Image (cartoon, rainbow, N blue to C red; front, side, top):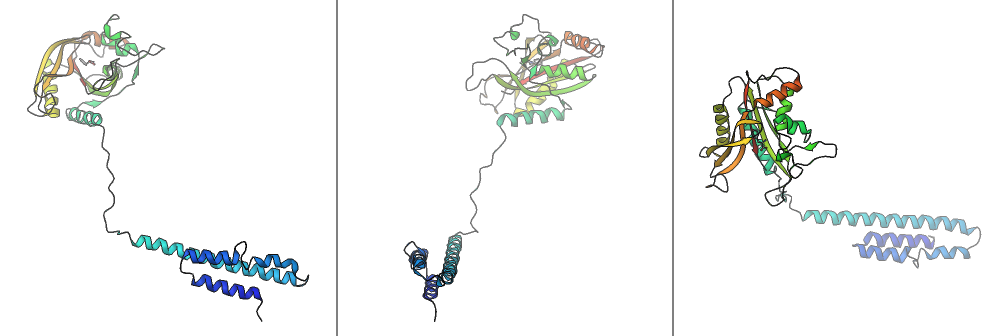
Length: 311
Ligand code: PHE
């Protein structure tokens, strides 16, 4: 004859097997294994048993409890996986997914890239230098007198050690001449820094592409041809380009470049886009001095330089 515990076990297993949902299963668990469950009740009953009966029933109770617990766990897992496949069945995998918005390059980066491409096609090599510069590279080497307003602390960010944040990337032109013999043809794209009231169109950091071309017999006609070509490539062939006399310490003569283009928001207005000029002989002299040679002999070499503001 089966022990009452075995009968309880069989009833429990049957009930678990025929439970059709999680609630029915939970009800069965409570009924058999809960605090007042009928299998649990045998735990209390143990104390009332004879000494020799106790270990036998104890072992049986353990077996029964384990079997019922395992059956519940199994059934629970079955319900869980059925629920999962049911919910997956509702998903139409042939539908297109949720598209992610694709990012793009920053407008400034796009403009710099386009500018660089145009100059590269004309044979300009990329050069670069540090944003934190010596005063010499930023001003002295560029023939800028000690009392020039650009050196003022109101305009330039100085570091405690006397270095500064470059106010233009012309510094790279000096570095290029220190590092290589003429002829050279380089552009220096990068950030420059000047104190400024910050508003929607101004900040203390802006971007430039500066350039330098030094060779024998470079003339102002080369400067104009190169930059006119650049403006037409960048803003469109119908762009009008104008060169107006100006002053920079490091070029002589110096020219500011204006464009009028339908591609620009202020299409009917002349907009100043660059400074330029023929490299001042004093710049060559200063470079020669630190080089300790006469590589940039101003009687032999001429060059033009320019700086485009990209904001
Ligand atoms: N460095 C000048 C500026 O930042 C631009 C410039 C470069 C002008 C080269 C002439 C020659 O405004």
